[in-house]
Amino acid sequence: MMIRQEIAISLRATAVTLVLTGLLYPVLTTGVANLLFPARAQGSLIADERGTVGSELIGQPFAREAYLQPRPSAAGEKGWDGAGSSGSNLGPTSKALRDRAAKDVERLVRDNPGASGPVPAELVSASASGLDPHLSPEGALWQIPRIARARGISEERVRSLIEGRVEGRDLFVLGEPRVNVLVVNLALDRTFGRPPRVAGQ
Image (tube, rainbow, N blue to C red; front, side, top):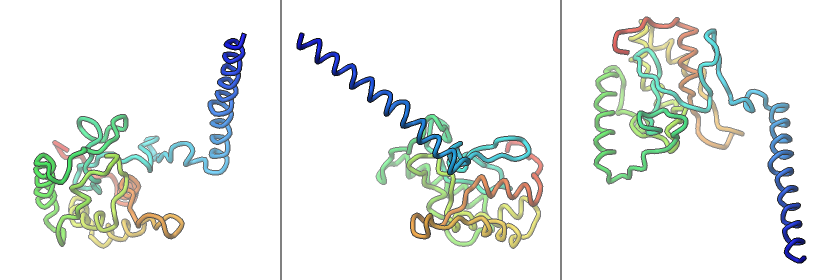
């Protein structure tokens, strides 16, 4: 008799917890989020004339010269895999990490001959998620000469476009100023036109 009572109490507690935390709470929070922040609640999706092209919250690869290029990604086997979001877990003493960073620095210097100053560290270091959609303003501005040359426009026009899209600190104190790579690249295409594809890119 006592065991039956214990089982009945456990089943009731499980059912109430399931309804409250598994159904009512998610429905309530989703409804409030959709009411107050509809774009963010739906994934902060970005669309252009082709339809949805990505999210403000998830980075994606850009390798062409005419675009702002993001940080490297260690997410998934080939990088930029949203289902395999992670860092490389390689430490500062890792030879594999040093070799990969050295190759990235070599490539960046070769592909950005007009850039001034050393390669920004963030352009050779992956984020913890491997899907960071942002660069610092310095990391973005360092790439201006390459983008301007590839698009056949002045560096001042590219600089103005990037600087006009620098996001400030959240609530004026949290985080650092940043640039969303996808937002800037879409703005580049809208403002200056989509560059022709080059074989191998």
